[in-house]
Length: 314
Image (cartoon, rainbow, N blue to C red; front, side):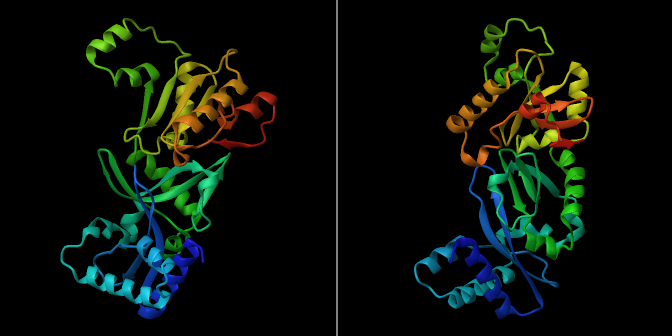
């Protein structure tokens, strides 16, 4: 039995132990910079707090030979202990009990389509996927969220289309965009003296690289899809934009010029992905292209060849 199959099996075993008055489902929790954690939610209508039951340890015990039924009983015991405690560490997750409040915290993030598990609702765009999450906490250098699974979508009685609409409305407010020149990004890493010596003068050029992210630098490539962001930048620069997926956290934007070579750009992206980024941080091996006339995003290679059937329209 694979890990995901185990999670589904123990979910069913716990459901049989607790009965029909409980809602039980799987979800994924992640804190930026840390590994994703799989967990189980168990909810009773009268329950004011949402305990978080992590499943990795139960899976390890099963691999070591402990019976599934015994593990399910242990998990129910853990749930009851957390539910009766007056000081539950998972108190931040109580928003998950409040369907209307949850709707205000649903956001989207972009990942490689290769990284999408089968139990996660998503929308494919070009060669990446949009996933939906519930924001739990956003603090400096730590953002905690829950990935919405198909089980959770059913419990909240929402469709993928509704998730998409909510996420598109909420995300720009939860994570406002950040646009900086590459020089500004580099300068922010230097001391004032180093900034003066490194950048004695600066004449802005429409061909200067821009770094697009969000103010939290949290899955900031998503800002590419914020309303009117690419449209406004393209209008300011009076040209179409090359969109380079430098990671899931940001995009580098260039105004198109005759100097831009598709093959060289794609080779550079591949090199950076393989040498500078973890697998989870990689989004794509290809550059994209924003046409300000059609207000659409294409694979740059296809666009330059005149093959423009596959795109994302804004």
